[in-house]
Image (cartoon, rainbow, N blue to C red; front, side):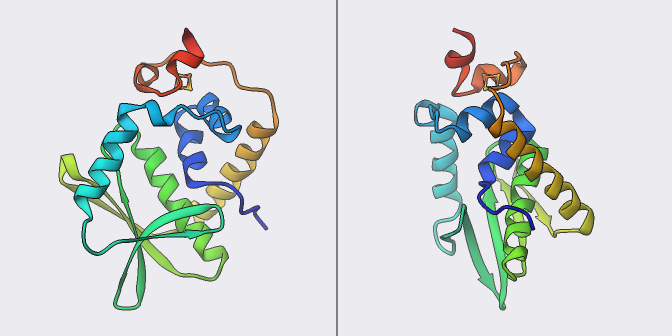
Length: 164
Ligand code: SF4
């Protein structure tokens, strides 16, 4: 049985940067200062004004819409640059709900690109997520992974923490 305390953001950061994952997991938060995060929240408000509801289930917070008795998770992302991270974050929500006996499907909307990706959880996704959750636990329990510079660091809220 997989531990259920991992947040969707942690799954996302696992694919983006292990240092970021570690910092976030230790409540070292600079996200409020990031223009990217503010833009993300604004986009979210602008895109789904009418039919979504945010619910919190254990360690996850998701936006859902119920259509013909099927629960649909709706994620909004401003950029496709970290698509793999967004996909796994959303699959993790499906995985989490499935562990609780709740069947759902999901979609990710990229408003700027006017694109929607529809997702359903496969057996392979589940196996991969079991591994990812184990890895996240290992990283969080260990020492902070050394920051390694990449292009996306310039836009990261932790940039000053890592490199100044
Ligand atoms: S600045 Fe770069 S190395 Fe540091 S947390 Fe952000 S992405 Fe990771």
